[in-house]
Length: 264
Image (cartoon, rainbow, N blue to C red; front, side, top):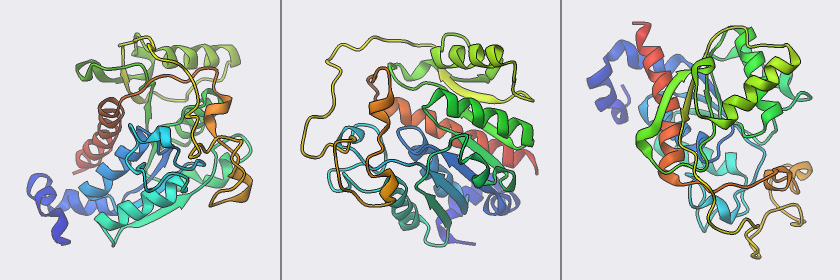
């Protein structure tokens, strides 16, 4: 047994640890929620992990994203996170995909090959598609609702999607499913909070030379994604805090661990 997992094995048992090591997990979106989820999974014993995100680290990510530091601004998020995860467990198999999950790319991810699919996507239309595909494929699927505009960690909960109350993203998703007449094929659990605060500060880009918004002309990674940045396509940018996004990510990881241990 890898000695870094001795405390995991002590609590969960040898059989559960072996199960974890054999599971294949894919996380879509490794920002404020997904990055912490990835770290928790790797520290607990997941050894086959695929992380998907198209962005580079922006200076505005530093307040909440695991791999975002003053030294990593401008670097490809999935590559920086992969390096971090391998520093924890060099034996892990980490696949880093600097890609966007969209209708055009969805089939290329072969999500049917995974045991767990974790949704930490911000884009509404892409989130709708991932939910539909994952539930149709019958894969164990967990989703994060909105983690912005929250401060109170005691209001973060887990519920089945159709039972969520007080979350604007869940409400928007349900409206979209009803409008299109294309519903998830089965129930699935989500992490959410019913708290909803208002932004008190000014809504603006970082406004520094370290900005990686579309006006930035150079950057590492896929050349077609150098000028891609989600902030420019959002109707509004909302304030977010690290302790909230991290708890969301840890709870998603916890759902995976719990489900895996139930198989014993």
